[in-house]
Amino acid sequence: MKTIFYLATCKTCQKILEELQPLDGVELREIKEKGVTPEELEVMRGLTDSYESLFSRRAMLFRQRGLKDQSLTEEDYKNLILEHYTFLKRPVIVVDDSIFIGNAKKQVEAAKEALHG
Image (tube, rainbow, N blue to C red):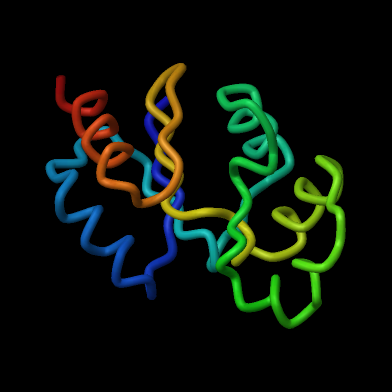
């Protein structure tokens, strides 16, 4: 499975998608349009150490809801990601049994290597 979960309106995601070209055989999933299913989130969680690692603390809703002042559990992170697309750290790139989360240069380079060898 090769899938990239991204937000079309995010300039950083657009730049990363350009950098990862060509994307032949890669499913591009726009998370605002389609969201993330519970099954997809379980697959992502199985490839990383926690739901928290998939969670974006930069989301405006994180501050608006006062979540930064709360102690969130793994179940909270999972439910928030499923509730609203903005809570998924972006992009999330799944290549077979590997996952690359976020826009750190090291993650993007590793994803590029996994996609193109």
